Image 1: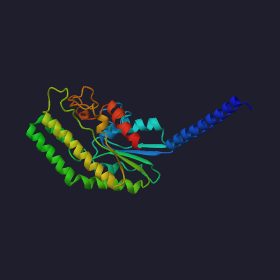
Image 2 (image 1 turned 135 degrees about the horizontal axis):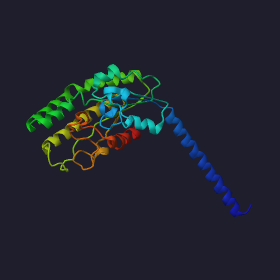
Image 3 (image 1 turned 30 degrees about the horizontal axis):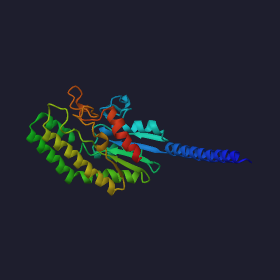
Image 4 (image 1 turned 60 degrees about the vertical axis):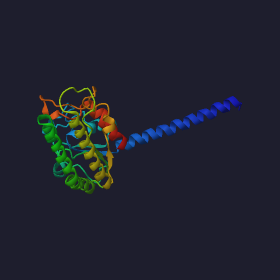
Length: 269
């Protein structure tokens, strides 16, 4: 065999081997993704409030086809998908009404929870409608709750998830900072109030991450993903106060779900 033919033959053989291995890897990855049984739990940040396109069958839970769990499902085609996250949910609501789909066969669980327990809706209402001093006082009360009470409530939820789905990979998603400081907003809250609200979000995330880690769960911090897309950024992935649809205020838009939450879940699932 001439040298040129030998080189060509060897190259073809090597290419064929690489393609075969690559194809096998892709097929294995697709098979692995398809074999996943995924359950999405949590509050309005997981149900997709603010993203629109709500499933009418979900009623007041407002589960959106644009929420990150539905987007992950569409992209990965898991073997099964149960979406029980619900607007307004607190830790007790998760344990009482969302864990039904979990089983020993569950492979992946995602959840965002704790913001409603800590009273963030009331914090924002207080800060928008009342004085700066009252706002800062309400934030201090929320932070004290995160110190004293929330860890035990998170423990209850996380322990219940582990008991029902002992083999599952559990991804706990956090919350974004609401405001870009020194941004484009020329009215509304003071910069001191915005700083305190951002700090409270960081405080809640830190407490949640600690509890998640202690249960062997993975924490998904979304603050970096939302950086540059906070309220006052000029390219916000969060709704500001919306007097015509107050429930969507301070929730991620469809872009916040797809550009903020989905990549964080995908990198940890």
